[in-house]
Amino acid sequence: MWATADAVEPRSSGYIHPGADDNASGTAAVLKLAEAFTLLPEPPRRSILFAAWDAEEKGMLGTKHWLAHPTVPLDHVVAAIDLDMIGRLRDDHVIVYGSRTGCGWRRLLSYQNDGIGLDLDFCWDLKPNADHYSFSERGIPVVMLNTGLHENYHRPSDTAKRINASGMMQVARFILGVTYELAQRPLPAPSFRSAAHHESADAERAILAHLTKPADRLGVGWIDKPKAGEGVRLSLITQGSPAEHAGLRVGDCIVQFAGRRILSDDDFFAAVNSANLFRLWRSERARTSHEKWSWSLTAIRFGGESRGGWTMPSRERSFSPM
Picture 1: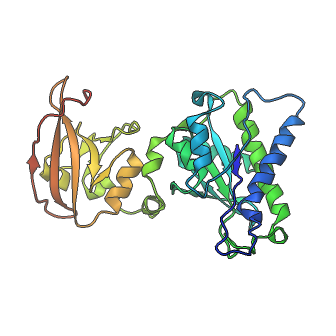
Picture 2: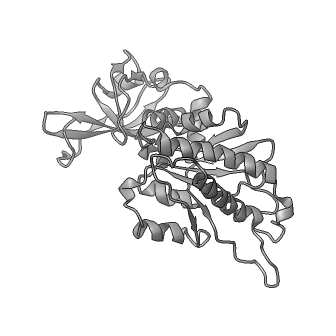
Picture 3: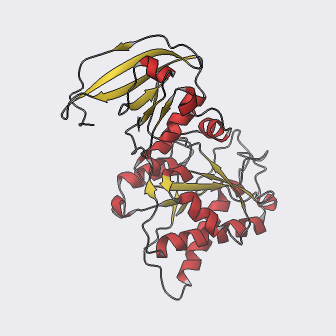
């Protein structure tokens, strides 16, 4: 668990930037949580590393340095929690970044929120603009909590008198429960989802909008849950559909659509739902038990006649059998 301990450089000389919310609030919470764990009758099963990183505003230099020179083996780090700007709680609203990086994060956080009453906003965006991103790049599940931007952000007016102290305590109690559960539970920690780096708020909106499913729009379906990074393997081709006209077959694996790599079924839903009339996609088809050929299809017309055709480039021998 950590907080960013640096402060923004003043935009003009002669002004002090207290940084009460960004990020004295997160740093204070980490210190208080560390103290709380020392007061437990018995320590949890897993160890917890509390840290305060510097130079986030200069490119996450603190976290990058520690990850390059860790004080504990990185394969022992099962999860990471970032508290960044938690001092302006309004209407109990807390933004949770990174929950898509770990299978089970959302369920764990929601369960621990029972009785706390925070309005958790699970954001799909994962951008390289805060310390938690450095850990996700190393394949470590992360979450970052934030109570939102405000008019005092990165300004001298970000002072202690504007901090919602009771709100900070509410968030800290919530994270205490989450951290203790992670450290004490006999179950494995959330497993990393590499697909999170290719997801976004736009993809979330497309899925939650209940737009036409790929099965209806393209005439395809699948049964198996895709493995991370391996695309979507088709188990159904509807007769007379654009997919059938294009030459797709059961067993084909969709690995790219409209220039976007397909790493999960969520990727596929979002890519198809947001596609324009004509798009490009690519599938990979097994030809023998030892080789795989790559096929490309251009210009599928959704909801009507398909145009284009299959072209066969050279065999991709570096791929594993499908």
